[in-house]
Length: 157
Image (cartoon, rainbow, N blue to C red; front, side, top):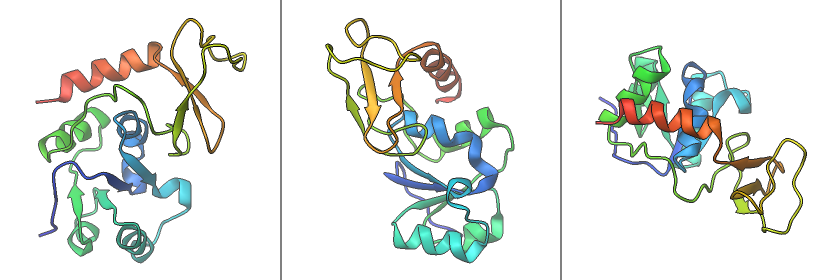
């Protein structure tokens, strides 16, 4: 039986669990996604999980059994997978101060109130805005944040 621990700081999602990426990053989990890294072979996933001290989240029973740390999910539906992660002990609360980029998993930094933002982002003088140090993407608490918060409130125990 694979080991699991509540609240791992570092997660590796296999390709069967890609719908969880943005949720976990919005909860400030350092979340690597196999699909972003081109990882397909089980041995490659296990090596990354081991080398980066990540808990593997998968729907593959055999793979979960081979991992040092894993959480085995049964469902295919994202809401149900989130509920399974909650039951496994992950704190699925949105971060009060977002720190992880939803696009690339890089670190976020606050955008200064007087700074300008790209056309797609609101003015930081009106709302808190963060920018990824790695990819440059801007984030703020908008309608997507509200939808994620609603979903997480439904699945949390």
